[in-house]
Amino acid sequence: MKPVLNAVQALRQVSRAWDDDIVHQLEDYIRIPAKSPMFDADWVQHGYIDTVVRNAASWVQAQKIAGLTLEIIRLEGRTPVLFFEVAPFAGAVGTNSTRTASGQTVLMYGHLDKQPEFTGWRADLGPWTPKYQDGKLYGRGAADDGYAVYASIAAIAAIQSQQVAHPRIVGLIETCEESGSFDLSAYIDALRARLGDVGLVICLDSGAGNYEQLWLTNSLRGMASGVLKVEVLTEGVHSGDASGLVPSSFRILRHLLNRLEDSRTGKLLPSAFHCEVPPERLLQAQATAAILGDEVYRRFPWAHDERIGSPSFVLPTSDDPLQALLSRTWAATLSVTGAEGLPDFKNAGNVLRPATALKLSLRLPPLVDAEQAVQQLKILLEANPPYQARVSFEEVDSATGWSAPSAPAWFEQALSNASQSSFDAPCAYIGQGGTIPLINMLSVGFPKAQMMVCGVLGPNSNAHGPNEFLHVPYAKKLTAAVAQVIAQVP
Image 1 (cartoon, rainbow, N blue to C red):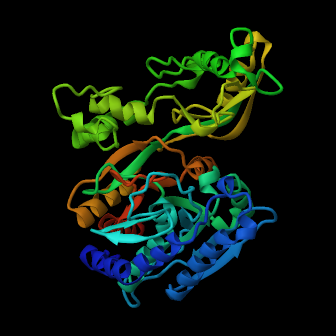
Image 2 (cartoon, rainbow, N blue to C red):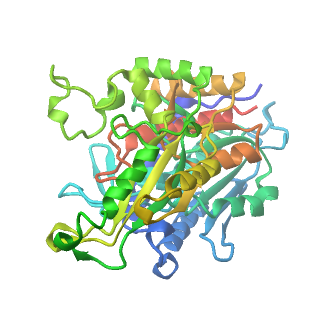
């Protein structure tokens, strides 16, 4: 009979690893501004990305995992990846537990690049100044997603320390995820033979609905982003002289965006940007809404937060937990994430500006093809420009979303066991509004693989924004849960 991982012992071991070592490793990681290439054009010269990769590689090699080999791979002109392989582990000698080589591989994924600083950090915090307080490790990138490689190795170590068998495991840690993983497909192609027959993907780059149970991500929205630019003049002119005759480039932008979005409701108008919610996802969303209730929307830092819970409070969108969940996971939405041509207030004279540009970010439902959406978006915005203005839309990034495959009985049972053992609560399922390009890539490349997409980005962790933190107690339990799932792979 195959020995079962002792969950209490595994949690105790990974907790020691976090307390004695991993938190300190992540504090060092936070101090390094390893911004993703989209936000640091000189990333090669700065060397921060190379530094965090080398540091992680050195730590992994120092853990003395049986059967481990590791390599930093650099394809020409691309960001590096950390690739490790752990041979199948037979388990205790002299028992009936010896694992026969099934050829199945567990792929563990994470990334080491970071989002930029952003503004609004508390006075005692900063993106590159780690602070460990009340179980929360503050600073940029530890939760998204620098911890993943450390947690992955700690989970493997917990299995091996109990002499429990595990299958072949590979790790793929990239460094341009925050830029849309534009280098990842090249690495997957280059490493396809070495990846093997992937039967389970464990991605630790997602979120959690609360910190009380294991959360499995069951869908991810896609993304289409680009820059919409309107040019009216070749140079700025006196607004009193020209306004009324020369149209405002900003007003033309507003007109163009009205083709795309109902500004009153936020609904995207083209039907091609929408899809039906599959029945299985709807049932899971109903269960999640019952667990989280109004925390679905209360967890965000509303500017009118002091009114939440008062009779006068009205949520701008929907205060129905189910509808709120579906809106952030299966609805197509538009965000304006950047602007050019708008001077700051102190430099804003009475000038009719020659041009305005906005960076648009569309979140697409999981089943909408992102490439087609970009093409439709370009046609929609550039056609018949008002006032014969020069209008252009140039794609920045796109990625199709993902909806999880149906899970076999062993996987659902493994998740349930892991959540009960580590959290003393059932496993729950939640869709995420963000995009992890790797998941769709691997779903296409390995259509039979199960996807354990999870992470530490729970309430108020605020990835990409100010005061980002990693909830260490949750990370410990998640690490132990990952170990339990790997140990139950058939």
